[in-house]
Image (cartoon, rainbow, N blue to C red; front, side, top):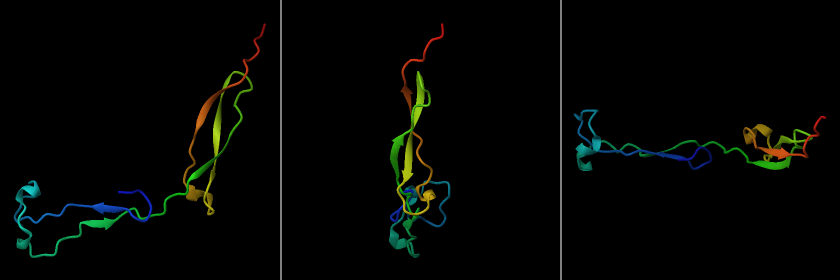
Length: 108
């Protein structure tokens, strides 16, 4: 249910069904009382994706506009908030916007 962290779990339904059940049938249509199932019920929940989450990126500053006149682009800079190696944040976000400088001079 989670992609990282310390609490991810995976769930499954477990039914008590006859041994001779056709594997292509819907199992819940053939459920029997659990008293007729001599074996211990299989585990229904297991841990999953128990890995550290990447540290968040922190916005720094916008770059200057890519053009000195007219339209251009600028990009947000990011810094990894982790005290470890920079790759503990994963890939940085990419945030670009259009910027406009004064109109470019026209040639006569």
